[in-house]
Image 1 (tube, rainbow, N blue to C red):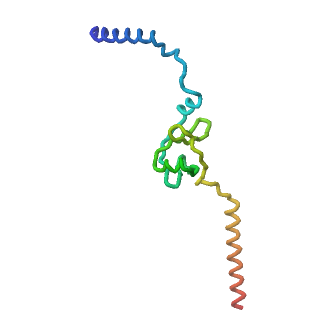
Image 2 (image 1 turned 120 degrees about the vertical axis):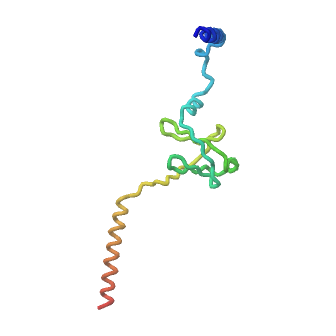
Length: 135
């Protein structure tokens, strides 16, 4: 035990001397606030398809078509999901302009009920027309 303690003591003394020369806990932040936001965001890598789309969290994102973005087809891009709910799509630190295409659109329940009633009305009209033709 004493053999190991001496080895660790030497290592500790080296670390103490280094920390006096370079006080790590007092160094200023080198990252900007936007870089810190990116660091603390949930980051996911996605591959850009030929149609300039990616899918993240059950939503399809359409990347704006231009020459720069066309060169990114098949390459990985990063999706940043910030804690406040905003999304950012970047490639090598450059933000990409995108549009949201939500596959899980909300369906208006009243429209479904109206269509069901309409189908019942159309069935009644068809039946009454058949009765008129038979008489």
